[in-house]
Amino acid sequence: QKEVEQNSGPLSVPEGAIASLNCTYSDRVSQSFFWYRQYSGKSPELIMSIYSNGDKEDGRFTAQLNKASQYVSLLIRDSQPSDSATYLCAVNRGNMLTFGGGTRLMVKP
Amino acid sequence: NAGVMQNPRHLVRRRGQEARLRCSPMKGHSHVYWYRQLPEEGLKFMVYLQKENIIDESGMPKERFSAEFPKEGPSILRIQQVVRGDSAAYFCASSPPMTVGAGEQYFGPGTRLTVT
Image (cartoon, rainbow over all chains, first blue to last red; front, side):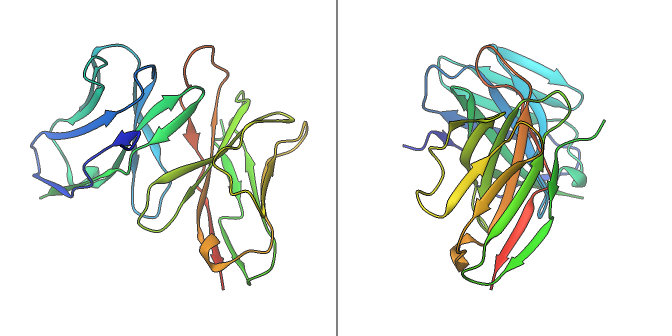
């Protein structure tokens, strides 16, 4: 079992819709969870961090964490074509991060 | 307020040569991480350093690869006797000191290494 698992996609949503990205992790003692966005040929960009169970909202983005189910998700409201990218879930292992393989999101105009 | 800086952005080396990749962390950040991303693959952790200390190098290949973060100057990832399989994007990230768990890591623009 991979430490951090994501569906590779592509996930295709129409412009204006909600995109839902999911991630599961295997280490029950993980405490820090992050979502990164990576455009093709570019470096990962941190978009959300979450440390407690529940929801955390920042603009059009909402991160959700359920430690009992070992599940993290990212919702993108009012999706825009500029949101088309690969989204990486990262979970801490001690002081370090383990990344999932990423989900490719395509937002169609 | 400069972000994480890496240089060079692109590096071409012939097989057998040495590659040196440099990373300067964000101001106030004392933790540096190196990752490798092969084409169409995910980010793989290589090494975690603090000033003058290698904290975890569990992701580093056992041979030809080394990393340092001296008291003065940037962190350096060194690859000796490069082979074609070393062709990849190498990213550096930095984070502030943290007490519990992992801090937010901010990535540099990366160095694209091509071995011919």
